[in-house]
Length: 370
Image (cartoon, rainbow, N blue to C red):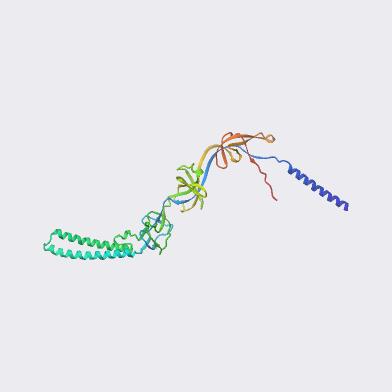
């Protein structure tokens, strides 16, 4: 029994040894190299670039008050449409004490002058009725009375403007009412009721009450690398894709290329602007991130092969043309002249025809995992 057990063990060890030897021998045998093969075809080749940027109104206007004061009422909210001249907010004036004192003093002085003008007028009228003074003298006195009345009215209006920001004579054009200077959509109202606001002057820009823009006149603004800007021409068509609206694409036309570069992350870039064609149904918002696809160059009917089939050697390019079939298949190295490339296919200007077959990259065998 022990004799048979030893024989079985010896047989198993022999089988393992033989199997290992066969496996290693098979692994050591050279494998046949298999390549992809391509037939040149006539295709359209486009070289495109993608420019990142954002959508914004062509003209965005900041509405500022004409006087300093406190916001007492807001009539509009962001997103609402406003007509030119429509009231957005109301401001309560906080008068300057120096100006207020001067305006009050002017009113008192005008009132004194008016009272004196009335006395002079009554005196001259009595003398004129008795024909003791000439009509010319009487007319001069009456003119002074009218001037005194106008001066008092003007002084009272000035006092009301300093104190309240509005007078009876100019209530319709009151500077306490902040009006939109253009028609459009209100993008932002950065103030609240109770906030203090100041008018724009030499020393500051003033407080922005609202930002208004025409959302039917939008532009795409982005930057392009200096290596590609030389291929751009004003009027070139573009396709705009909005990051938040992937299903929608918009046509645009390049209308501005900056003559000066700006440095960004160590690279020189040029600003571009493109007019975006939108319809009334497009719900575009200011500040949307967007990508612009622009065709830098194209060839309509070009003989093309996959760029992976090209062998580059210095300034020269080569392909391997397939000759023969089966075991007699060989590959002939052929110089070619290349043209435009879209990153996948490349134009062949010289050295190939549609009847040729070209060797591509080596086929990599897939490994199966248990």
